[in-house]
Structures are given as structure tokens and as C-alpha cells.
Length: 438
Image (cartoon, rainbow, N blue to C red):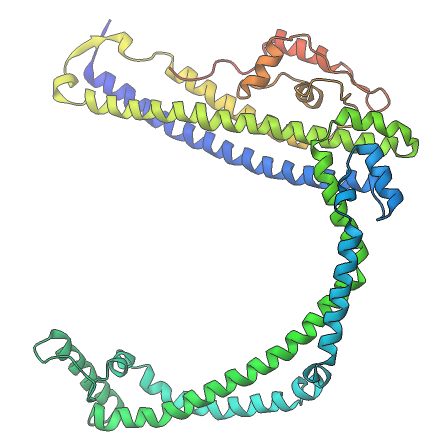
């Protein structure tokens, strides 16, 4: 069967039109995944802080020794937060004493209170300035006025030559301003009247600025003292939180399985540590999965879709030329299955959006046995096969169709088991079909 060049052109125009919203939809999905990744990153940071708080509740030799024993972290031996705390306490106390000994701080109510001397001085300066500002406004609001003043128009410093167009332009502006102000001459009448107001106006502006600076300095003194006192009052808590963050950086990269083993020496901490370690490990796995999907969509699928759209546009233009438009071609010049594949990609996008949302929402971390491969977090959290959009993760399960994560019976009771759920899903074909347009 043969078709015309016009039919081929129409087919590729249709491809380009279908690909446009498909690409837009996948770009929106990439944005969604980016937001999901940001959320998981925040959740992981919070989980890290919570786990560090379980290990470290005070700044003491005993607490640091306990942390080293249970986590392998010896950072506090090299960088003792108590030494930094003592140093900052000394700095804050000295700063507060210096501020409080300053005469301006001691007399702040007399200077900047509601009836303080500087407050009244500022009010008087503003009262003097206001009518001058109002009077001078009639000059400065004239279009082109400030430009004439700046270039020295109608003064000995005016340097424009009569044969320059700008000379006549400024002359016209000066005449217009004189007329608007009901004055005869710009240099003899307008400028003297303006300068008579500008000089006191500029002086009073500087006065207002000077007094404001004095008032701001006093307020700044009080603010610095208040901030220093507030920090001093909470210094122990501040340094404890910072020490927990420091420990948290180690915990984030520590061997989660070892952390679970070591905490057995402290039975009263065991449950809290297990919960915290598994939550942190689960969030780390989530971030890894989201990143793999994001990279694949950006660097593979969207690149291919953009390329396919460009080719479709180019072929449409080609077959619209008279040379090809009325010629005949074999029917295999067009892709008969294009619409089916495009619909499949659209359905795959919608499903992937739902699955990434479900992944982020899943919070049953406690039952995951950390002896499992990290890839099994997907099955444990989702109880379904991973998407093709995460190719390395997808391949892991393709090679292990009967994979089943070990679970902790103290925390979870899954029925059916994740492995059974995945095997059933594979058997039912509950995976994304196909991949890319060709």
C-alpha cells in the first residue's frame, strides 16, 4: 500500500503535536520528583537529628564516651563543644558588659524614649523640613528640570554648542518650565528661587539623617544586648543541638547494621535506636530511588522525546515541499503504532507520578531488617515491583523475581509478604510496559 507525501507530512505533524504535551507532562513530573526529593531530604535531616538526640542528651565526658562506644564516633575528643561554649560565654558576657557601660545605652530612655532629646530633635527637624520639601516639589516635579540643573543650563558652566541638537532641546525644556512656573527666565529667576529652597532643604535632610543614625545606633546597642542575653541564657541548649548535628553527620553515613548491633549493650536505648536507624536508612533509600528516576527521566527519556519531536518537525517540513508532497511512498514511512506507544508513555507517566507520591508517603520503616540489600526497601515500602524509570533498581528485581526482604516480627506483620506481592505482580504483568518511542 502506498501513501502520498502529504499523508506522511500530516503524520509527522500529528507526532509533533502529540509529543508536545507529552514532553510537558514529563517535565512536570521531573519537577514533582524534585519537590519530593527536597521533602525527603528535609525528613532525612530531621531523622538524623532525632537519632543523634537518642545517643546524646548532655555535654559530658560520660555522654561522649557512651557515644563513642555505641556509634564509633570520636569527634568530640578532637573538637570538644564545651571548650567552644566556654569561650563564647566569655565573649557574650564581655560584650554585654561593654554595651551596658556605654553612656548612650545607660541614657537610652532619655535619648530615644517617646520624649527623649533625640526623639524631639528629630521631630523638630522633620517639622522644619516638611514645608521646604512641599515648596521645592513644584520645581523638581517638572519634566527635565533635574537634567537642566545637572548640566548647568543657563549658567557659565553650560558647555553645549548651539549647533548641537541637545542645545535646542534643553532650551525648549527651559522655556517650558519657565512658563509652567510663571517665571520669565530660567537662569535669572528659576535657578535662584530653586537654590534658595534647595540649600536649606539639603541641610535639613542631612540633619534628619544624622539624628536618625544616632537613634539607630542606640537601638542597635539595645538589640545587640538583648540578643546576646538571649543566646547566653540558651547557650547550653544551643551547643547541645549543634553537637547533635555534628554527631548526626556521622550517623548519616555510618553502617546502620553495626549501629543496631552496638546498641545491644544499652537495652534501654535499643528500641529508640532501631527505630531511628531504620527510619534514616529508609529515607536514604527513598532519596536514592528518587534520584535514579530523576536522572533517567532527564538524561534518557526526555532527551529521546525532545529528539523525536525535532525529527518529526523536520520530516513534516521535508514532506511538505512540492518535491515530496505529491510523490507516493510505501506505507511503512509512517509509524502505525505511534499513538499506542504515546498513550502508553502517558499512562506510564501518570502511574509513575502516583508511585513516587506513594513512596514519599510510606513511613513504615521500623520493620525493615537492615541485613537486607538496600534495593529491597522499595519492595518493603511499596509491595510492588519498581518502575522501569529506575533501570538499575528494576534490573535488580528482574534478576531476583522471588526476592523477599527480611522483616522484624516485633515491628511488622505483612500479609501477603512483600516477596509474594511482588511475584504476584510480575505474574500479572503489573509493570510499566514498553519504554520509548521509536
